[in-house]
Length: 66
Ligand code: SF4
Image 1 (cartoon, helix red, strand yellow):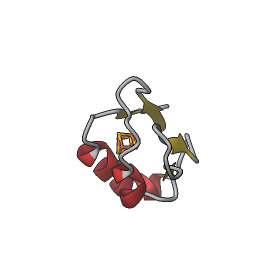
Image 2 (cartoon, helix red, strand yellow; image 1 turned 135 degrees about the vertical axis):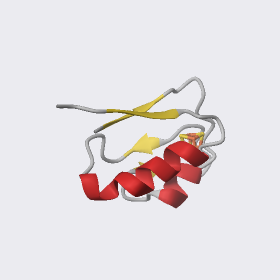
Image 3 (spheres, rainbow, N blue to C red; image 1 turned 90 degrees about the vertical axis):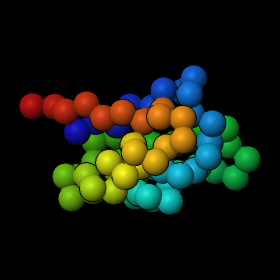
Image 4 (cartoon, rainbow, N blue to C red; image 1 turned 180 degrees about the vertical axis):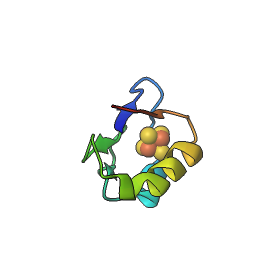
């Protein structure tokens, strides 16, 4: 699983950080997210999927790797 952020869409809302702080971080006053772990463990999948779902700008997508 690989995390992809559309930087044109991300506005730094931080919803993703709330859902999965192991993976996403938004610094104070930042306008875009930092992905802490672009290839996270499968155990984090439910929280990452919540971040994808609740991101208000739909900036997060995941791609699957074989
Ligand atoms: S919730 Fe979406 S818009 Fe907000 S920081 Fe995360 S990726 Fe960016």
